[in-house]
Length: 406
Image (cartoon, rainbow, N blue to C red; front, side, top):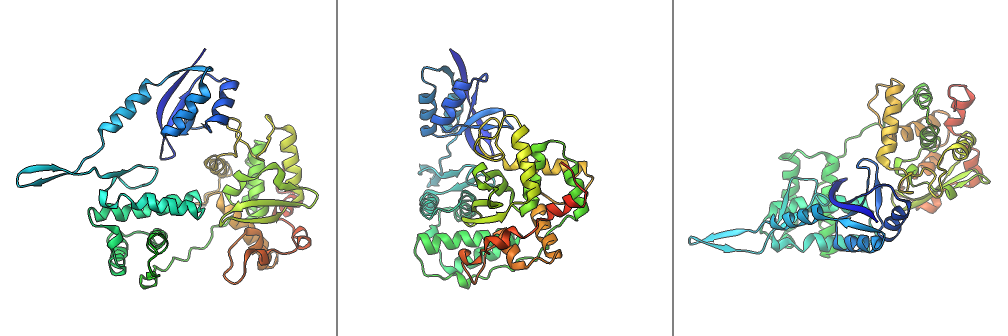
């Protein structure tokens, strides 16, 4: 019977259970389907987030299929339990043991160890529950909890629920002037506080009294058409080339590339469906004829063929990891000898800029990019399909000029 080793694993700032064994298709299927295990390319192992529930699911999935070695995992959990910090207060020479402080793990806070006293131990769970009930994205939940945990760590034994608008105003001034936090971080922190006090505690909307820092106007970093052509021609792998072509051809975010499914490509209407993008918005974007040819060649020749996601991880069967797509862009940039300090998001900026330069109405570009509008709702922003398909992607122009090949 196959032997499987369970070990503690830190993956993407989260405590996990690493699952190590010689490759076995039956076990791969069992742990991915029954225990929701995922493959880590960087650690070269399967993993699940560390929790009792996930551990039990894992054991159940492996029952009768393998023997489990978990000595290292058990020792890690035992050591972790011993490290629970207990506050001790000295009164008249005697140590009085208090309830333990709450230690915020890395998956909630990116700060150095944040200790939250028992008086505020309810805040983060209550806030997280409320965030879930409102279906906030994973990224927003993580950011809000991180920002709130910083305040709780500073408060020590002062109840967070008793703070007034004046207290919070002074705290934000401290974050700005003493901690020298950047504008975006300050905005995130205000948003987190606003969510807790106004939505969780149902306080009156007093946050207008707290001045928001003016955001710095940063112009988007754009690649010229010649630079985009050099970038594409530096790629030899057809799958990698198809990813970057897709990003530039329709101005997609890297998360949107990773989430694209085969069914989202509609060649009859020459559209791509971008589902549940930023702000939980769906939108249609035009499908470039050149991109369609590239995607067909990629799907026809690439092994193993993608089954569900357009760009699929060979190990997990899920969408290609975002960090890997970002790394592909950086490697292509180095090969193309492009010195600009830009990331893959610059392809989105370049798409919009090149479209504007070609005289495309900014309203259409706004729709293609899925940007928010204060004045109208999403459904009124979408232009008619006939107008979308008549828009020529800048990728097509590059192809026609003979600057790129695939």
